[in-house]
Length: 202
Picture 1 (cartoon, rainbow, N blue to C red):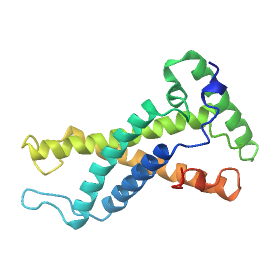
Picture 2: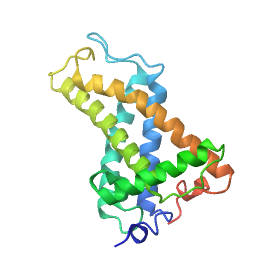
Picture 3: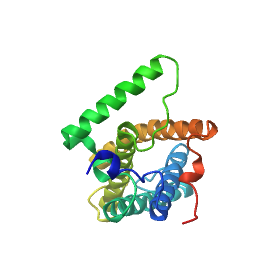
Picture 4: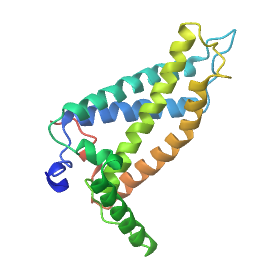
């Protein structure tokens, strides 16, 4: 099957895809917002109310991330799994590099590349975003499990899981700002209205 046929209906997002996307996005945004001003746990404190919101939104993010992977596995329409993760296919890697080169060439001319939701670059970026959000949620979940079982103290110092979690947080900020920013630009340029993803109608 050709790459075009595999992803020909990717712009018609299934309701399940839109729901898990919304859940993951909202829970991640809640985590990022609370992380800016919360007071974390210590040996004598379980953390303030904002930390509790951060923690439970982290559990929600982990749940939605796992549901997203299940949706990708079993859905019957949308971007092909291989298009989201092209790194193990020589054909898909070549398509990604060609699409990236085309985008850079157009951008260097001071123009915004045409929107192509099912293009190799856009698909790969979405796949990287899912991997990043999943790793962020899993690392936080591992730390919480270690604290509950007594393996790790409430203090994050010395925790490999939290070292990864903190490092990924900066990447998540970059991805969120860039992803939301491009979505907003395309919305106002009317090339991709936000309602394509953010709607509840089947």
